[in-house]
Amino acid sequence: MTLCMAAVTVDLVLLTIRQGTLQVLLIRRGIEPYRGRWALPGGFVHDDEDLDAAAARELREETGVDPSTGHFEQLATYGTPGRDPRGRVVTVAYLAMLPDLPAPVAGSDAAGAEWRPVAESAGLAFDHDRILADGVERARAKLEYTPLATAFCPPEFTVADLRGVYETVWRTRLDARNFHRKVTTAEGFVEPTGHSVTRDRGRPAQLFRRGPARLLHPPLLRPAPAPDRSGSDR
Amino acid sequence: MTLCMAAVTVDLVLLTIRQGTLQVLLIRRGIEPYRGRWALPGGFVHDDEDLDAAAARELREETGVDPSTGHFEQLATYGTPGRDPRGRVVTVAYLAMLPDLPAPVAGSDAAGAEWRPVAESAGLAFDHDRILADGVERARAKLEYTPLATAFCPPEFTVADLRGVYETVWRTRLDARNFHRKVTTAEGFVEPTGHSVTRDRGRPAQLFRRGPARLLHPPLLRPAPAPDRSGSDR
DNA sequence: CGCTTTATCGTCAGTACGACGAGAAACAAG
DNA sequence: CTTGTTTCTCGTCGTACTGACGATAAAGCG
Image 1 (cartoon, rainbow over the protein chains, first blue to last red):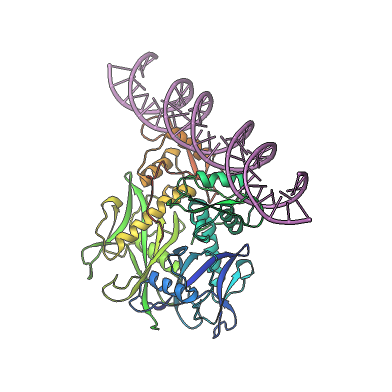
Image 2: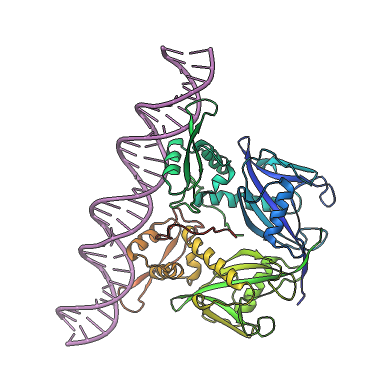
């Protein structure tokens, strides 16, 4: 039995919503392999560094954002032989859902870090297409039974903002009135701040902040996910 | 930046239901560290071997079971420095939900492989307590919105068998009549075989097989998971 | 001041679910 | 063979939740 030693990296699927579209932070690779191609940000895990800590460090390095902003979780691990032509590399992917950052990609050490629409992100380096797809699918599913849509929002937001998150991530249109009822009556989903704002036009909207709930009971299900979906393992 | 090379292993959380309790396959360790303690089965990933393939191989080696039996998925990855006193070891954990195997632990190469109740499995080697807990929690959650409870059942089973799976894994009691309605009317959950069997006493029950659905719409929610649950990340 | 736009509240019917009654079909005991 | 017990299966009822959609409130615009 061969004992496998491998390089261990973390890759980040950083999702946010900008200009009404779901966007992911990508880096233009400056070196081979895949030079000039877009890739997910990531890097090697240090000796004596926890996986979560490595991912959090990369997040800070790439975006200057504190991991406590938004939501952060381990996604999955990818280690198919040959996924990196330089040798055996096992990567632990992390998924983050972040609000639209005012100072985007500030302290980034990677040259060409950029928010790019997920819909136009095919053709990434390595197996990052797959990792991104898995991350997006995870985010879609989590919106159903958790209040994590608020992770895409700033500290204070309106019901319409929150609805926009669902509509963007799910690529659906939701009824504003039913959504409003669901969100405001669900226990611990959002809490009113008392303030209100006027956006563009129309009646001013109440501002809310995140509530304490970690799960939605009952969940907020997607309209009709087609008669059957493919196996959602991994 | 230190480039981290690590040994990569796979660990298996193999769950089944035996004698009305949720059980996990454990191995009595014959060598240091943690000699004599129970641990999850697992082993090193071979060179040029995919992670999924390594997990499937271990499953076959430990149980003689084909991975297509039951359900099999990646759970999470654990790589905290010091989790293995021998050096940096990153382990990719896999979760399997298996029917009660007629020939249990047959081709097992590990000396003392044994099915043991999850409830009595505290004090495992390494961080396996945590991995097991994560696996059980994942299984509990998946029963809600997937038809994977059938993975614990043999090819043909009764509604009562299936209800037993839910009751055992959730440690709850469900109303037999409501459960029967839910299962038989949910699209693609189960399909009648036409046969029926008499178990101990009582009216004979219809036999079913797994249906084609991968998701339950709407889900089968647990009664009342306490007012609030802790963060369920990782 | 109407008109448009957005936010919020309300209504109504259909679906799903929890609680529970009742019949059907087996076995065991008398 | 009858009665009782057990388990499976079908129904009923009230409540909760959801989807469709009408109506009102409160802003900006011309």
